[in-house]
Length: 99
Image 1 (cartoon, helix red, strand yellow):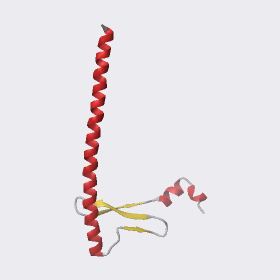
Image 2 (image 1 turned 30 degrees about the vertical axis):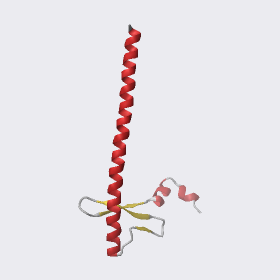
Image 3 (image 1 turned 90 degrees about the vertical axis):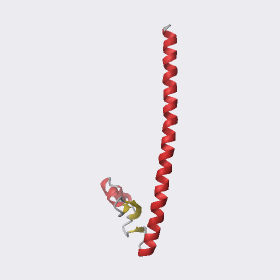
Image 4 (image 1 turned 135 degrees about the horizontal axis):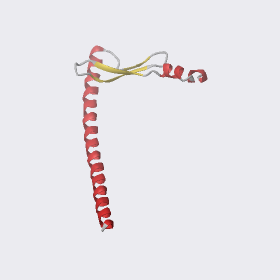
């Protein structure tokens, strides 16, 4: 009898895990589509604003730092991403092995 009970609960556990993974895949796919469509909207808007104001959406500083448009904030401000590779290299001393 105990054998049948453990098989029963094992089956329920398996079905629960299988359903949860399928549910998560669906949820992640939905989020991917939502974020991708929002990115395309923001990128298109940023392209038109950059052409209108004649400002670049991506530029590099002489020290290797890259600054690039990321997205729009809720208040309409443009949000940019910036790399800090030079500072990070100094932090872990890899700048000493650069040519």
